[in-house]
Image (cartoon, rainbow, N blue to C red):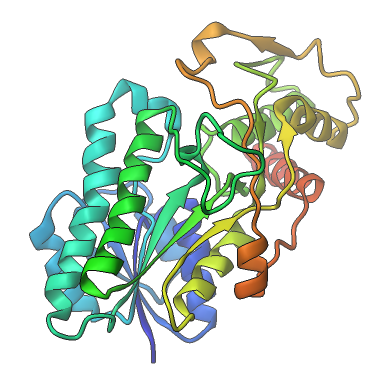
Length: 326
């Protein structure tokens, strides 16, 4: 039986990945920071078979202990301070967890493997935010990184460190450069979920307006459930490598609003949406769109859920959740 250790198992990707690996017969272990983690109940409900191990990406010794408990064949490093806007407010914490945390996990695996380099396969959750001020459109594996947020900078550090450990120590270490991927499990602080939640509340008469920042920012949005399959496929390859994972389509926030409001029968949302400068990024990333041709050819991966289906899924879920709340 394969054994997998997932950092960030309480997040959107961690939950979907845990479900996928469980279905494939893995014994799943999840690294959790703090015994009072508010998402523990959700993990127990969705992944009752998973074994939770307490540890911290900023504490190397705890990661070595976690590896000893899990004895994994695969490690998926999804743990990060992942809300981009917050990274400007606390760049130091973002760096400690998102950048140095990846280094700590790589080093822990190196020490755990000893002379058996490559016995533990490592996945690093890289991000399209590393491209930032995009130097070419679409973005592919060889595109120059130009991050425009402390989060993007931290992810770029982790990405290059993964490559360095692969080349220096012979580790089976791969990075998935994932473009924006969303789902009904997305946190409400992220713009896609903020929109779907607000639209549901507007439909139910619980909210009047929605306030956002830059409506012209464009992203390559896919479904998180599709993207975790790409993570797993990378770990099944004989040779480790880096892959862009994306839908290869771009939509701006206005298009997202079109689809979300149309789902509740509103064609003109202009009277429901306001803009506020406080939601603007200090350094905006205007256009991100991936070229996932390498992953499609080498991994046989392709997204199944389209943009409209994804937005409708999120709105429908929030309609149900909001209707159930008093």
